[in-house]
Length: 427
Image 1 (cartoon, rainbow, N blue to C red):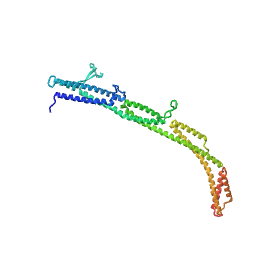
Image 2: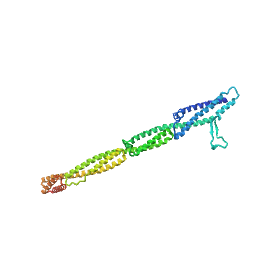
Image 3: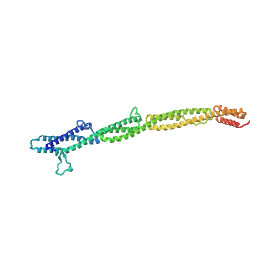
Image 4: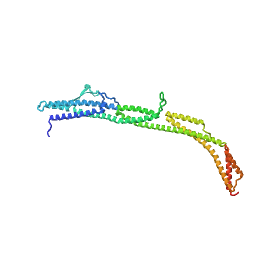
């Protein structure tokens, strides 16, 4: 295989550099056309305000992109010079041919690109050293540095884009959850006064929600200015918001309990009033019907009035949405009302027992009179004295009020006589 001539080698080298420059242009334009680059590079060279990790990484990345364009021009300039030298080489003439080929190799393979001056750090200087020196580099080295800088810049810029793309839905989710919690917390907060500033202390969960909203505003600003450093804040806010949601749900459950208990307390007060009226009615009837009726004391009306006032205050506490004090107060109210209910029920039961005892005596007497009539029909007559006792018992039971003890003794004596006569077999 025939080896290419030196000029042919030069032409191949120039063609390779042309292809490199073409690909470089293509990729630099692609990077420059990315939306994230245009956002971060800003308009008219005015970059948007960034902070934190993003600022620390994006600034050098954008500077690197600008440097890439500058170094691309340096490379293109060297390649253009080499092409000019190549164009001056005649295939027919031999003078200066080797020198021009050497010049092309020096341009494309030697330290032909000047990068400016580098300041020498004081720690690196000797007494007679210069404070700065010119920096030269060969095209291949510069190209390698550019490839590394391109990759670093691209990585940073795409990382910012990916961070924003990932954080946007997360922030939307957090904000949506915050909206829900704000609506829920509104049901827990005390109502605002008609005039003047709000009074009283906001519930703890409402105060925490306000703090979380302030933190969300700070986080939103941080996501906008430092997406690379904001992920930690987003990750921290999610569990904090979830815990706040649990507490608000717990508070709402407490509110539901309070409202349900308030309804039960009102119903309990109504039933207590009915039980009180029934107890008074039965006690009054027992005292009218039964002589010397011994009954428990009726519930003092002052206690019922106090209970009504207490319930009214609890309703005010609920209206003010002070759920915890309301729940405690309602529990105590119901316990007191249960005690009052038991007192009214005991009074009614005692009165009913007395009235029932009178009816029971009348029933027992009637049954024994029927039994005595059956015995009499069989010829087993009862002593007339006991029949007189039966009539006495009937008279006592018809009295108002009934002397219950006397009537009880009369009925029991008559009952004993009938039972005894029934046990005998002969006259």
